[in-house]
Each structure stands twice: as C-alpha cells, then as structure tokens.
Image 1 (cartoon, rainbow, N blue to C red):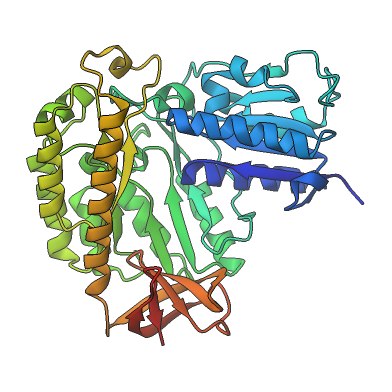
Image 2 (image 1 turned 120 degrees about the horizontal axis):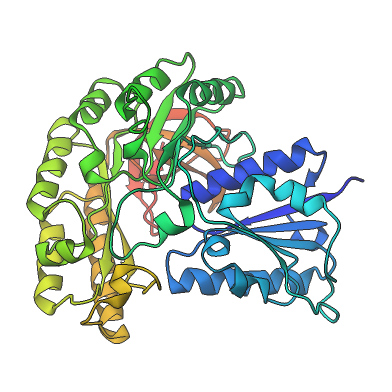
Length: 439
C-alpha cells in the first residue's frame, strides 16, 4: 500500500479550493487519500485566522491530530501559518509550518526528510518554517479542483489576495495583493469539471469582484461569467461572496437573463451604521448598500441575498447597534453571517479606542443571530407549495437525500435520487430542522 494523506480544512470556501489543489498534488505523487487521520502518513491542516476563535480551533485540532497519530508527518498551512508561523511551530509534534506564500510546495516539503523528531515524547526542536511576505503581484495558476473531498459542488478559485484596506481585516497580510487567474485556465478547468459530470460550479476567491482589474486590458468579472455560462453542459454557476461596490449592474442583469446563474448573492454589509462603516474604512454608506440590494431584488425577486455583519466593532455604541438592527430588518436578506469582533494584531482597528466588552459583543451577536433566524424563516416560507430547482448532495439526513436550491435553500427529497443531480420538485412542507421537503 502506498503512502496515505489526510487534509483537514478550516475556514472559507477559498481554503476549500486550496485544499482541493493540495489533494490533487498528493494524488499526482501517487499518494492515497484517507478519511481517517489515524491511518495517514502525512496530515495537512489548512488553517484559518479570521478570528481568535479560528486560531484556537486550529491549535486544538492540530494537537488532537498529533495525539491520535504520533507517527505521521504533520504540516500546518494556510492563513494562520502565514500570519504567525512561530506560534504554530512551537506546538509539540508539528513538523512544518507552510504559509500561503509556499502552499504550492507542500508535497515537496512533506516528502523531504524530516529535520526534527516526530513522536510526542521526543519532539524537541521547533518545526521547519516555510513562509515569506508577498512582495510582488503575480498572476497565479489555476488550482486543480477535481478533488472535492466527496462534495458535489467544486470550487474554482479565480482570484487570490486583496487590495482593500478594511481596518479590521488581516486577510490582505496573509493572502497578499489581489491577483487573478488567467481566463483561459479558468475556462479549461470549468470544461474539465463539466466533463467529469459536475452540475454546479462555484466561483471563489478572496475578493472576486476585483477579478481581472490588473490585467491589461482589463478583463471584468461579468465577461468571465459570460464565457463560463457558455460552456456546453454546465447547468449551474454560483458566485461566492462579493463586495457590494464590485457587484456591477452588468452581473445582476446577466443573472436575471441567464437561468444557469444561481440567483444567490452574498454581499458584505458589516454594519448598518454609517459611523461604524467609516471607521471600518468600508467604501460605501448604508444608503448605497440599500440601493444595490434593491437593484438585485427588483430584477431577481426570488434571489437569496445574504450578508456578513460584525458585532462590537471598536467604538460601536448602542445607537450604532440599533441602527444596524433596524437596517437589517428592512432589507430582504435571506440570512446573515454574524461575526463577533475579534481583534487582529497589526490591523488599524486593533489600535482604536472604545473597545466593546466581550459581554456586550456576545449579547449583540446573539441579537443578530436571532434576527438572522427570523429573516431565513421568512425567506423559506415564501416557497412553500412552489416549484424549486435543487442540486442533490452526498449527505443523508433522517433517511432522506439532502439538496441545495438555486437560491440557497436547504432541502430534502427521496433518498433514491442519486447525488449530483439537478431536479425540480414542489415544496410540500418544512421540517423541524428548517429543510424544505420536496416531492
């Protein structure tokens, strides 16, 4: 039996796309993937660092994996590895820390001879560190995405890095400047995935709305989308999170006229208070954000519109929080992703005055999550006794096949329907878990 590897992924869809590329690299080197980390010869932890909690989860998982498998070669990569490699290198049992700057070299690093002992009892030396700052803006090569880890919705990473200066965000420091994958490579990968039988493809990246902005001449995202939906055999294309000022009218108009584009837009609000948005260095007001949402809702009234909200940003008052709640209540959101503010050292926000107490942050977060549940319940209720188009997934719950609708609603249908099929059915009812039951 050949050598086996295991990949643990934390964080965003971009990390999931990166993990797919890591899987493919190992498979190309004749490794075998295992879903049992205790059996792996090489373990990769693809980390997230967006919050303190994310960091804690990475450290806890890394220690657990080492305890369960003291002989494997253990490598931590991803955003936490880029931001604070020394912290991870000192965790007993970690053999190498590989930042995003060196992620493409993971297989090479994993297959080189160890420079330090591996076992828990005799691991005395600090782990090898492979990380450097992002000094140049270079186009990156499209990552192979066929190894989806058993998922039916492969992520195609079209863009990397970010040039924005949001005062709370560490991502530009750990992902580097914005750069785009060549369009011919993206189209080639989409064609390959369609030929492999995938029905839905998700475009992902750190700041996908800036796709092609640094090409000369520019190659805007809407042009790329038009080329992708023209690929024969592709049934559905979904966009991942996009910044409001990069969501052009051309994209929403294209989505309204092309049924292949999922009516689902995740656009990041972060706060409903203009004072807070200004301190966050967000390049819009709540009034402009409202106009963008209204344009989407007018053209695609059944579209799912999701957003991100940060609770407890430095200086956020009760009045700011009230404005955020009232603004969200008025918006036709289908769901919220609520993030308690987490200070990231090195960001402008970490030096701001007016820190909000953890108790207040938690209270405001719970308030916003309850509001999210209400918004999602209302959105789901609109589709009872109506037709929905869903993609069947690999998971089963309660003896039924799970599925995802084109407008991002969770559904269940007969378990005999195979995974990776787009089917239409009538919504009969909603179950206690919030899934729409389709017959």
